[in-house]
Amino acid sequence: MLKSGQYVDLSVIVPVFNEVDSVQELAAELTKVLSAHKWQYELLLIDDGSTDGTFPLLEKLHQNDHHIRVIQFRRNFGKSEALSAGFSVARGQLIITMDGDLQDDPAEIPSLVTKLNEGYDLVSGWKKCRKDPLSKRFPSKVWNRMTSLMTGLRLHDFNCGIKIYRHEVVKSIHVYGELHRYIPALAKWEGYRVGEMVVNHRPRKFGQSKYGVSRFFKGFLDLITVMFLSRYTRRPLHLFGMWGLLFGIAGTGITLTLIVLRITKAIYLSNRPILFIGILFLIIGMQLFSIGLLGEMITRSQSKGRGYAIRRFLGE
Image (cartoon, rainbow, N blue to C red):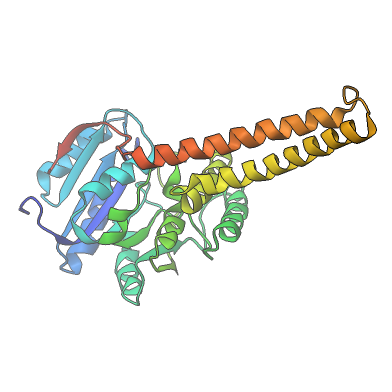
């Protein structure tokens, strides 16, 4: 039995939500692979508010195997929060994440370790031969291409569930909301070396995907969030202040020009719509500049809190 705080070679973090049919088989596959390589390991299974009997099964697995630790959320908080909870308690020198639906292949773990040791801090899987319908593959391909262009990180599959990290990576990246899709980009912007490796992707064996079309719209909004966080989270005034300054200069220029015309040519301004445009630009400029200053104040005083509530922790 591991003592509290004792490090292991590998931590495998698996968020699960209503995966009662697959979780026992997945745990058996992981145990077989990890035991064969004689690693010291732990399995962190995060129950993200399941309602189908998943947790009683996880509780039984924990009782039968001391390598298995279980966190149960009070309700469904989402994959990002589940990963964040796993990252916060993981004791592995290397951390592996994978989905709980059996589509990620545990047999890829040794290859991921080998790839990481080529000099990377994070290696993301690439489902090159993806076993999903075209309705999921095509939008995902477009989204991955767009994400690569906007982040500057050339990956084929940002949202692949199976990834491997060095311990320091997961301890320095704050994941919340839906930002799990962009962990490689967040790591790159922190200065970590990110690689990619083709992995085996298996057909779904039980149930249906928990993700609908709406995730692509959310993904785009999250991408904007990531772009902002990576560039301006510590200096919001640089973003809002820049646009505020531009609007302010434009508004001031328009207003001063009209004042000069009123004085020199004695023309009336009440019937000139450009006057209202100039005033509008001045107001927008002041508002944006004020938002930037408020952002700076919030940044100085903010504290990072967790966005999930734990009901039970087995193996703490």
